[in-house]
Amino acid sequence: MTPRKDLLDIASLTDEEIAFVLDNAVPFKELFKRSVKKVPTLKGRTMLTLFYEPSTRTRSSFEVAASRLSADVTHFDIESSSVVKGESVLDTVETLEAMRVDYIIVRHKQAGIPGLIGRNTRASVINAGDGWHAHPTQALLDAFTLREIHKDLRGCRALIVGDIQHSRVARSTSLIFRRLGMSVAYLAPGSMMPREAPPEIPQFGNWRDAFDWRPDVVYLLRVQGERIDEPFVPSAAEYHRNYGLTDQRVEILRERGLHLMHPGPVNRGVEITDAGMNYEKCLINQQVENGIAVRMSVLYWLRPGAAE
Amino acid sequence: MPAEERTLLTKAQMAAGVSALAEEICKANQGAGTIALAGIFTRGVPLAQRIAAEISKKSDLQVLVGTIDITQYRDDLDTFQMVPKLEGSDIPFDIDGLTVVLCDEVIFTGRSVRAALDELLNFGRPQRVQLATLVDRSGRELPVQPDFTALKITLAPGERVAVCFEEVDGHDSCTVQTQPPAR
Image (cartoon, rainbow over all chains, first blue to last red; front, top):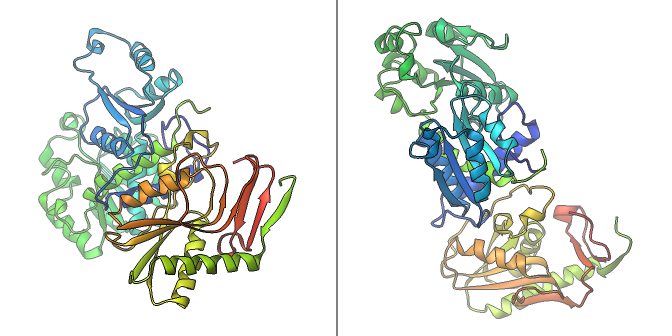
């Protein structure tokens, strides 16, 4: 496969590139069973995480992935840096360029910033979430996780539940699922339903209709604390009652043998409960483990300085 | 296609070479009880399988067969135009205390074997590691030598040995090409 410089979103990947990343993640995951979980593939390279929004999971996942490829890992601490003193993103990038890092992992609240950085550095840039736009490695790990269960994803049906409108995860994951031949439907309160969704994606306002659509997997999104308030939803309790995976709904999943996914971190008592977390077909832990393998596969594929 | 290509080993000579390798490996490991062969992707894999079949015919050694993918250990990935697809190593047995014979169709610079050793040792601590190659050609860049080889030959740096196995390529052949095809 031809190497790419940056990974900014799912939309810009070809079907072959998606398959290449997912296929290569399999042997990377095999490493985790060994006593030595490390290979020297990126020995001497440096990966830097540049997170303008807080994250613990995605950042650690990238850090573990890079460590297992023998890259050196460093973090650009925004909180304590000159960024709080008003340094622009591009000034920061110039600094990083001078440090000659090879991979920059970017999260920013504004869509498009990872692409802007990518155009201004020789380093490979991976988008780890930009605004409502994209979170491509999350989408890749979701597809990888589901592919471990259904060898061929064509015809598989995923119901995505929660704040679709404000979710880059929903955007990227819907896209990759559909690219792999799956059907996707949304369940959300009207205030959280996307305003510009493809017409092929059915939109449901309640669980009964959504279950009638016969999904194979239910994908819950995290409800952001700041959205629990007017005008989105009146309260956490009401969200839970109407759109959360209540204990009774977990029983429906169990009866029908449906799988459950969530990008984490979860809000217990809002979109999910202990019963959902303990549900035997809950794939959250597999998603976390697979995230490392998929990110290793992405780092393996990208090449700093490659022509775009 | 390369400008010039001449046969190094005929199909029959290849078969005889595999048989001779099996013989030598058996002799060197008499009384071992169990021996493991690890084929280096791509064409070390069919070589290992063929040697294993011969050993099973000739002796009562128990033979285990695994595969080694060295891609993650290469020190020259940057020079590749394309990023290679990973096969993944498959060593479905415990190598601790075993004699493991790495199998590769050609040894040239010795760098593949170096990478294969690194990968193999991540699976455990074999008692001993040996190396079997069908062709040992000149041009070593590392101090690595095969324990068993069917054909040893001196070639110019621009010449390339191409071994084909039916399992991978649809036919058996072993030739020397004067111009290496671009990777």
